[in-house]
Image 1 (cartoon, rainbow, N blue to C red):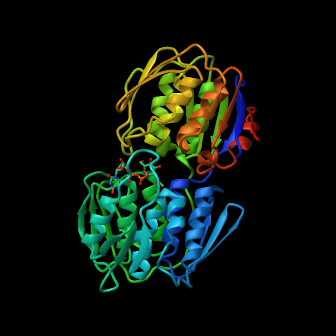
Image 2: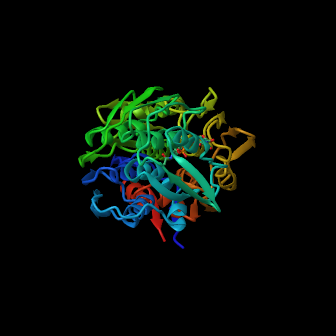
Image 3: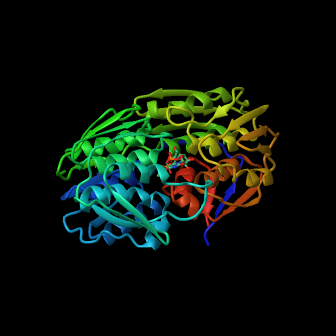
Length: 419
Ligand code: UD1
């Protein structure tokens, strides 16, 4: 089993080009199976989750191939509508294939995506919305069998109880080829939704309102292939900025999506780091010690503070001057990284959805285990700032979301290697 060995205390300096967004690339890969032609996707990050998505595409009869950071998906030969359980379980966001399969084949059999990582992640909103669009859904020993009797879904007016990212994506995917108009109220406004819609429009879909709470999709019978470039990953950007903030130094992120990263930047700025932004660039300089963030850091749907950046910022604030308070409002179990940070000397108290982080003078190295993707990245952030050496095991979690993390950090002068 591979691990990351990190020796802290070295400032990070240099320029880093931000990888393509995982959370954009996954639904876009699912959407590419609806095009009945060839799609070329550029800036696809090389991640285990992306390869899991390509296995699903190949399994249903598409041909998905990679050349560097470009993926080609040919969906002309889809011949299967059932996604085996083991492929569904490889990756939680496999559920997004449900909307795409329904939109293209009018039926699919999938299973509940596996495991509990961040607390219960139900799909009740996905299923309720698809039913309203004419999909018959039955559950049989963990398998979800979906069928549209007429072969084509119909438009519907859907109001989500919560702006779920995945549910919004599944509804959009099913709606683009549905008969009539679909309106999604209280839709998720995450930038990755806009990227998915941008891709679908490039394939001929008619969607307006993405990025706002009310999305309107006018269905059309057929889409076509296209060439598309995936947006930069705002959470990877937040991670490398947190690393530099914690370890000290200065970094220029190129190929960054600046407005989309602002909800994170406006909080990070309160730690005393100097941050300047230009077109597609973020510059950060971090001096000796960070200051605690005085206002409560509440994770919220976009454009609030992103839940995916909570752990990496917490790691940076673990050795800041003063006390910072986090409030996690999106997921139930999103403080699983705190035990590892405590093992590294952090003073963190978790009380339900609140975490109180009292900045300590210095963190120290320890042997820790990645608990989940962003939690594992938080351990790398802490390790780069800590005295001594940290070994992080179970890094398959980290590899789900960061493209060659050790190469990116080493190039900035960090002492990190994969062993
Ligand atoms: C996506 C992101 C994930 C991010 C999250 C919130 C991808 C691949 N993943 O996850 O990185 O942390 O958005 O920004 O894009 N919920 C229900 N019922 C449903 C659906 C969701 O109760 O049918 C709940 C979830 O349990 C959770 C909350 O809604 O508490 C938010 O989930 P959602 O926005 O759907 O997140 P994901 O799409 O799973």
